[in-house]
Figure 1 (cartoon, rainbow, N blue to C red):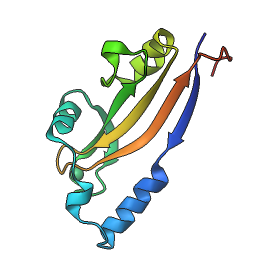
Figure 2 (figure 1 turned 45 degrees about the horizontal axis):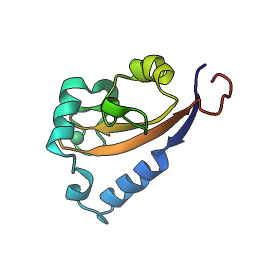
Figure 3 (figure 1 turned 30 degrees about the vertical axis):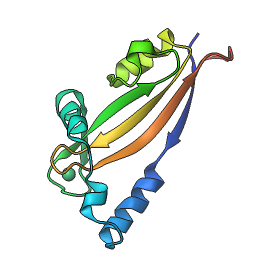
Figure 4 (figure 1 turned 60 degrees about the vertical axis):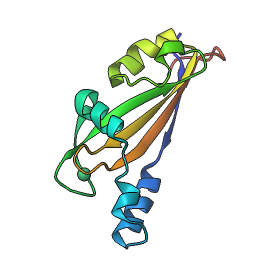
Length: 127
Ligand SMILES: [Zn+2]
């Protein structure tokens, strides 16, 4: 049985952060603060996008899917390709959450794009 997926989209939060940056309410250090390890992961296994970084406008953003859940054991906190999240982990675990983060490897911009909670512990139907 496939799990129920519930998505929370953070587009409005992103717009708010970018507006605050462009009006000078927050600095580039507040918005371009990706940890070097996140940048390394994004460079090596991040998924390409066509979206240009909203800060430096030089690099295309890369997406990372971090997964967390009580029963994930050694998979907890790991990054997985999107196809594995939807066709693999979803069948393997009863419940987990995937946090999709966009990262610019050039200027260190990073932002939570969406979270997707998968749950088949309630025995509900397919999504
Ligand atoms: Zn950038």
